[in-house]
Length: 256
Image (cartoon, rainbow, N blue to C red; front, side):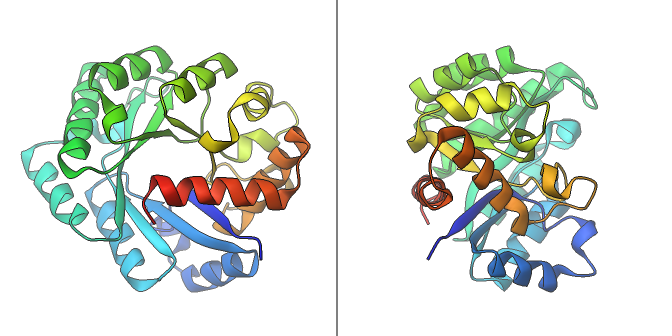
């Protein structure tokens, strides 16, 4: 039976508070076998761990989003480290740089990003990277800090196909989300064409970035199938083949 892995979800978001269990059941009905809920601050990281404890097929990542980089301090780091001791916490993140909104000063973002990498290396857990309009500095910091030692996935990848190939050469992974399904998508489609299949993940980033088939509605893990379908179309493969590779890639990367 086909199994899908939503490698970046936010069921820890308040938008799922009223119908969380129904959302989980819909995901299972749509062959989503694994869900990774990703934290963006301390409270959402705690909630991700709670969900991982509650649902056998859910896992957690803990971290502080670059929007909130100015909240990363020794106390926050200790909390993240304690949360990461839970066996169902499989990654550190999301962390990285966001130069689109600049909700935290760029130098503060960079410092918090480096501290996340250091924590990931201390705990031997891979990194989930948020990169918006910061490609050059993301690449520089990941290389300088030797993030490859623990593993890297750039979630909701928005870079060029050339950048994707460079990431793959570094041993990093690329995750594609709803934007690859949009009618005006150019770079995500090109990335889907060229990224080596063994370096590819799929995700929803729910409740955000709903695929074209459900555009305008809240996104949820059940919709990751639309991402798989589009990539299968682009690569001229079956959805079963795309599901198999992306799920096995994520399971191997996150040691599940």
